[in-house]
Amino acid sequence: MTTMKDIAEKAGVSRSTVSRVINGHDSVKEEKRQRILKIVKELNFKPNKVAQSLVSNQSYLIGVIAPNISNPFYSEIIEALEIEANNKGYNIIVCNSAGDIKKEEDYLDILFGRQVDGIVIIPSKFKLSHYEELKDNDIPVVTLTKDIDKFDSVLISHQKGGALAANHFMEMGHQEFAFIGPHPDLEGKLKGYEKELEKRNISIDEKNFIECNFSGRSASQKVYNAVSKYLNDYGLKATAYFVGNDLGAFGAIHAFYDAGYKIPDDLSIVGFDNTFFASESRPTLSSIAQPIDKMVKVTIDILLKKLKDKGNLNFEHKFLEPELIVRESSYFKIK
Image (cartoon, rainbow, N blue to C red; front, side):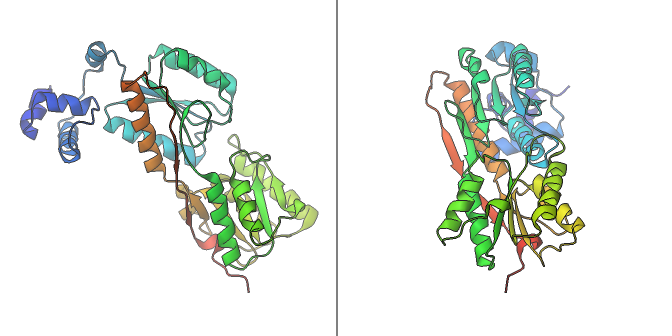
């Protein structure tokens, strides 16, 4: 059976250095850390987590509560969280709440029972009163994708994302604009979209607010139904459609196609999240990208920093920059 001594000898370092790398300490230079991790993988070394827990009083587990793992955006976040946590010597436990607060409360009890060292929450709501008990249990918590009061948070500026979509549409010559998504728009995507249009004295016709809920596994179908009703009631009243997430955008594209419209010949669509499906769909989908890998790295760094310094009561709110990725669904310029 491979031991830390074997790894240390092959890497040409001390056992204590190997131990620091395996336990996720950041005091080892990156080049050396990567070399040790490569050897750990080659030798199929499995650290004794029970022994580690007894020595350090840590479980080396991070709980992750996500609202909808069928959404490719959330599944990509979870995959990135697992990779980053593993690189720091931790494993993750994933809980799919489906946006149900009662489920989230039940999962909290399970995570308490597993004695996780910290929790990453990808919230479905903007109020997390049912997480207040976490503070009494001395468990570090970071919220990812939404800015939540009294919690450390990592996200992008959704308003900037909305502004990027508006600017792109205007540069392509569009004059009639629409928004597809939940109302009220608590994340700020619509607000950023509208504010940027207002700078050019452009407003969105009330009929072009296509309201639909993105929650649950049937999100794409909900958008399909909402867009189909909109087209049946009003016809194609806009040429530029900004959709609150990629999953919804796919549903919208199918609805427009089934109604006989071509994309991007008749209209343009921009989604949000830049999931891997965006580059695989037909047409490929323009989308506002969230830097998932960077967001996840910042999230884990904050979590581990709080774990080392539990007396730190200051909350960090990290806003990263969104980016517009232009693809086929919006490249057609209006003449």
